[in-house]
Length: 107
Image 1 (cartoon, rainbow, N blue to C red):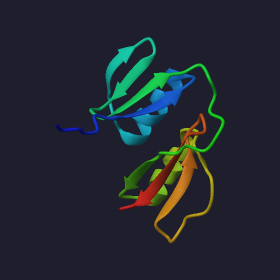
Image 2: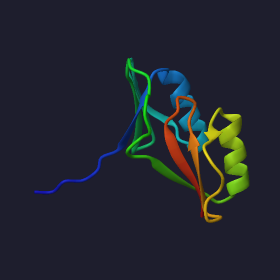
Image 3: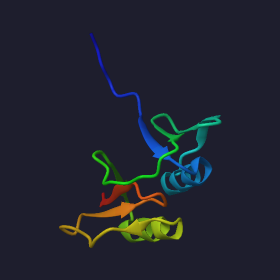
Image 4: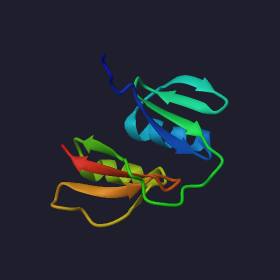
């Protein structure tokens, strides 16, 4: 038996807005669109959920940036907010526009 990860799914209240955020931040095209689902590239998707985010994510994305300063500026311009300072001069925790945590890491 073989088990593998097929993709990562992020819950969203405003599906279109959050899909636009992640698409622009990661440079991923929409590859599938349904009323409650948007796929970005081969491995990332967003699904509409009715409940708001209320607690810290137990799983999060680490995204790697060739230009950390430009990536954090772009994240902020797209509506993300930093959660704390840069840690170990290597990574920083952010929240997307709906509060889902992710890290921007230096390459």
